Image (cartoon, rainbow, N blue to C red; front, top):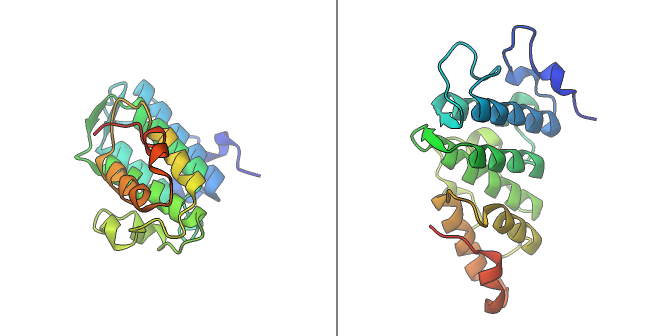
Length: 193
């Protein structure tokens, strides 16, 4: 059972990654970041100017700290965590994070996809680090990648106003090599760059 949302926030209103106990509580903490991005208020915006619908470097740093908390460091990124990141991505209409969140989103989603397909993934601090190239550990071909996971990624990306170029390129490469009949590709990746 996951920790109640209220226990993730200290009484002074600061969310601490040390309060993350599992993938579910990490997903809940990411929901707090999403709410802060939407409103410009809350524990992740406390003590700084934060505009509604803006994702800044501090928001991206919150996400990175949550995703690499000690309790989840050696667990694969869960679907709930990846979905929370997609929600943050969708909530942010303005960006001032120098691309850090886009990099983190792509790496976290591929980490989830690879692990959900039974493939080996590095610890989160390695895989999600801005210094680590996603190509150094992500699957370069569809061998072993679960088609349902690829379809889930496509459904998350379909129709979004903002395209994640890194994730799009990796997914297209994997799908391009996959054993899907070509007639299905337009339905799987109906996204623009």
